[in-house]
Image (cartoon, rainbow, N blue to C red; front, side, top):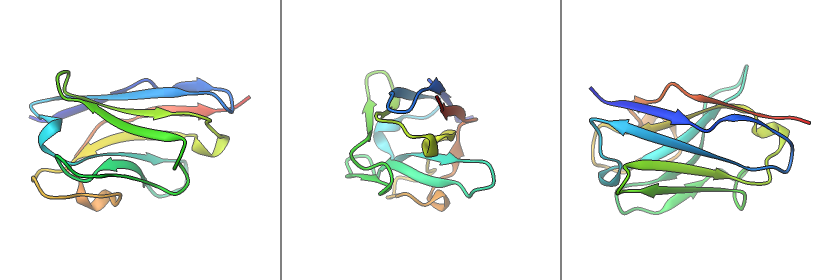
Length: 125
């Protein structure tokens, strides 16, 4: 049974940084696309950053380009989201996700089958 678990969320002041991590059981990130998504209250879930495939390119939402960086450590089987210069509008529950198949996936939630439980990020002074 595939399980994804996010960690690293919390409360941070505007301009601050957080690093989220996602670990997996019964799943190997390096062979698949993997994405980070977020959902704020009353809003739809949106893609933030992704690896489009096992060796694919990275993609970022326009709202986070230059501030967020997705990375993965294959030896640890973890995926990270480094978030810098955080803004109040970045506040949301952040999820990592992965597809069931080896194909490409991008920033649409529709391309993903496995989801973590989410971790709350709150940016506030």
